[in-house]
Amino acid sequence: MLDIKVLGPGCANCIKLENLVKEVVSENNLPANIEKITDKEKFMDYGVMITPGLVVNGKVLAMGKIPTKSTLEHWLKDHLSK
Image (cartoon, rainbow, N blue to C red; front, side, top):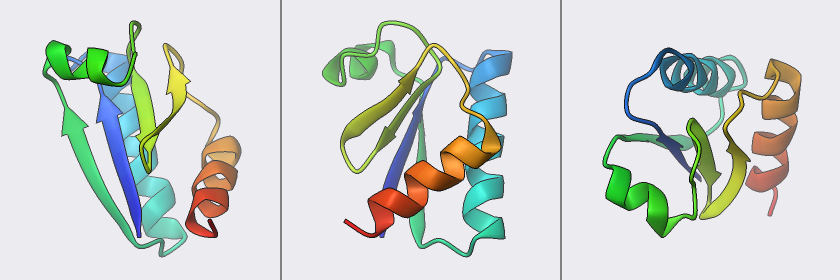
């Protein structure tokens, strides 16, 4: 089971990243819990200074950018196998 957190205050890129994560999880039938975190204090817990941020299984994978769909698929599948 993937524990995915999308960090962002609700800006356009944060929403895009959240939607992309949901799309990849759905299309690949990945078991995942997706959480949107908008509390700026919690961003600091992960060391994320620039949003959007993507945290998978406690590891920050992206900060301040949106990965391509294929990159995101690769990351999620890779973390699922660990």
